[in-house]
Amino acid sequence: MYWCRLYAAIVLFPALVSSAPVPRAYLGLNTTLLRLVRDNAVNISTHSWENGTLAEALTEAEWPRLTPYMPVSIFPPARLPWWENAFDVLSIAETTIDQKANGTLPLANGEGSVGDPASLGQAVLLYNWTRADLNDTRFSTAAGDQLGYLLNNAPRAPSGAISHRVSDVELWADFVYMAPPFIAYFGALQNDSGGLAILQIAYDQIRLYRDALFDADASLWRHIALSSSNDTGHWATGNAWAAAGMMRVWAIINHSSFSSQMQPQKNNLTQWIDEILTGVWKYQQSNGTLLNYVDQPDSFADSSSTALLAATTFRYSLLTYDGKHDTAALQALSLVWQSIDKNGWLLNTVDPEAWTQPTQNGTHSPEGQSFVLLLAAAWAAF
Image 1: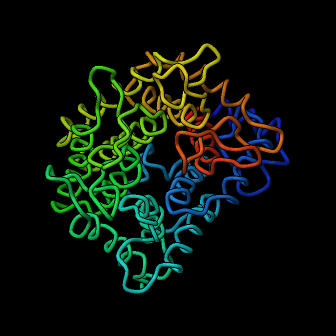
Image 2: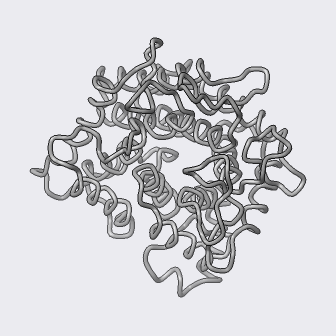
């Protein structure tokens, strides 16, 4: 199916195919409009988690062979070919290192977050692996410092779960997308007994977060636990972060040299992703959207979380051969596509910094823009 869409793109959009970068994930959709989505995402992403999510979205949309969902991602080529140079992803990594304050361990200013800076780690690891100057150790050192901070310096819950916040121990569903995929990618690239141990840590952190946040009665994750201001509601974006993060870790383990050894962990991750997908899609509205708090009828519609959960569903279906959620994801894809205006802005999104409120008129969600790219990429691969 992918190559059929590629052929169609070449025939229908020859001028676009000749320009760079060619966003391969846009196949079958309006390429021009999705370019605007991409450019808007680049232009408004400023916080560490926004740029980390953007780096992953650009990788999936434009350089799909380098994503965790493809075997070549572990290990990537030592030198990227000109047609797959991932220049925009590597630019994010380079900017991250250039702006990193001397003497600090996290990759970026997390603005009070432990987990968010780690979302930049996969791009930094890719840069380090493919760098031209083998004497340049800035990227490997920075990635090692980020890992060391998570494992040795960050506050932890009594269970051993790494806190998502610096000032006090708080477990947020968001963390599962930010930190465990970086930890897992680090371990997979290390590719020795120490690497296996690091992969196990990535899995264990997900397990500990699930223990704290999963609501078995609803088959959904709560948003925040252990905080003085717990959010026990089933926030759609929190469930999306958790499911998407687990999907990335599953893919990294699956393409690592430890895949067979970690089959039980992969089986659990598959079950835990399915739990969330089962929980969210049963509350899908008739037009395809999910509500900001999934099971609260008076909550507003949120196209942002709908996009990331649909993307995760397509990835889940493709990698596990379990297509029971496909119909819901296809309906969500249609809804998200209809929610993009002519200027490439995703409308009807939650405010990512005030998650009980929709974005105000004239403002947009940086992560929502990236989620559209992740959805387009997953749809192209599907």
